[in-house]
View (tube, rainbow over the protein chains, first blue to last red):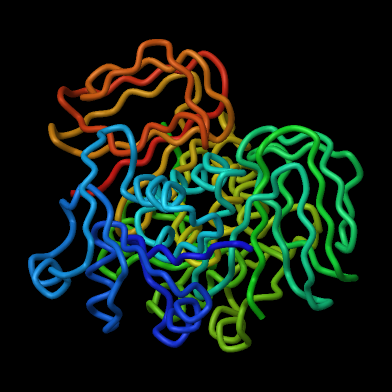
Length: 208
Length: 208
């Protein structure tokens, strides 16, 4: 049984209704440092707060004084990484992250690497109001309606990329940022299958 | 003499005052397809419109009927790429792009590759309200105030990365998304120098 948790990071949160759906799905809520400010704003009480605690506002600290809080001052990792590490230690292995993207571009791009870093200890997906990002690993299969837009994002040189169910089919091809990308493909049959021989590939599924 | 142009792409635009400063700096404005809707909204008249023209609104087409418009239906390139290609053909070699980032994450990341793709025919930088992104090439030198935040973003495996003037100094090191990133470094002396032996590195300068 997958053990699910929702992580609220310190970037741009989704709309309230969307956030509430994700909370219902996950059941357990972890705030990454300043993500607790977002939780407070949305009237959500987290189950844990993790990070170096330099971004959480005093108001949130007071309001959430009863919430278990884990301070981690490691200089080498971001609050999101600290949070994911804590979640894995706590046996959560399916992690949905909101607020990982959408404000500072360097944070957004830096966070993309996180999808690869913790796989397969945790299956991490990033969700915003426009879509969701998942790590492909060596292969990924998912159901999708025909016509949906799916983009393949190579984090490094990805070799032997093969797809089934997408309009612009790839057959053992190479993808690399700045050389060959796989943006804005379209689902023509479900389930969609993506396999990768080498490299770290991320798939973005645009919500309809 | 560098020949400058500003490209308005179809993503999230900067605030009006910031956009006006960039327009003054550049002098020549090219809209990438739906970027013309942004220009209309801000009361700005472009000097050229380039793209497959499937995103520009009828209202903008009517208002800008006198603006030279270059339709390019190439399936393999984005409107932003068509625009940069057109600009290079028109001898513009220093291109500032707004609206390349900030809405759909797949577009944002896909566009990062563009910084590398057209170098050195054009020096392209992406600007939003939080900061600017530049391609490092084999080396980049820039002035910056002490304390400013600078992030290094590797588009692929970057080897032999060396920095001068940054707090967390790199000396011939490797950077790669998901393995080792260079987010949130800090300027300690100016000018900052970054050199790269192999790979495509992008630098994000956070505005203060």
